[in-house]
Image (spheres, rainbow, N blue to C red):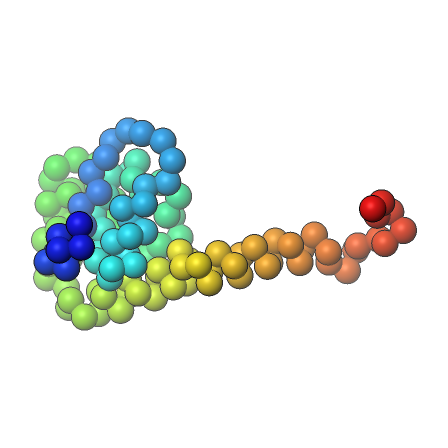
Length: 117
């Protein structure tokens, strides 16, 4: 797979059914590849920039997205992919989201008198 990613400019995530998060999208962004994806594969990635995650519903839309991405500046796309991955999908981003969730449980309205250990 390493060689395939290294020799690719765009990832096509074309799965139409199945469960769970589609890791191909995250892995492609981590490797700085924009993604042309079915709606199914893009599920769970709604916060990713449409500049690097393009969703298609039919063949003509997929082709149009591929042509648009092929015409874009490759280095700019790589930078956006890297930024989106770091901002939303990296380990560090996950730790930050977990920190935010935990701290929201213990916000200013926390009542120590009601906590039982």
